[in-house]
Length: 145
Image 1 (cartoon, rainbow, N blue to C red):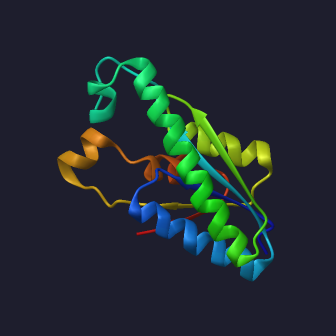
Image 2: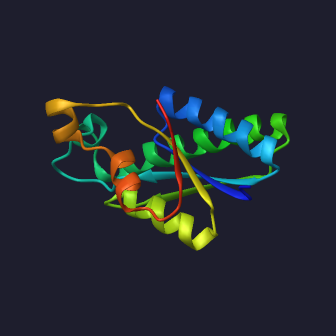
């Protein structure tokens, strides 16, 4: 049914679970996987504490280290499961746009991602990239909570 699955990750524990389940689904369907992590660019004022206490070079160094950690972990799990997997990292202001755009460019027929289930003020202030992807994507989205 699905031949190319895009799994979006923010490197959270919940997102790691979505990667595991997405890779399981890919294995069952003999699909290939692209895992995408979108890093928000450095801002002087930001909601992410790392962006506030770091200088631009420190922030970028931490982002590269985080990307390397994600890639290593995902590639290890994918190899154990026998799933063809590529890992991609981009820096972008609006992660949901990159997720949808990458799915289109890569020819993905399913997007898998986690939802933190934020509601109320937290949901309003932090936003929900998952909700934005669900709202704007023409590709089916599978959400893990």
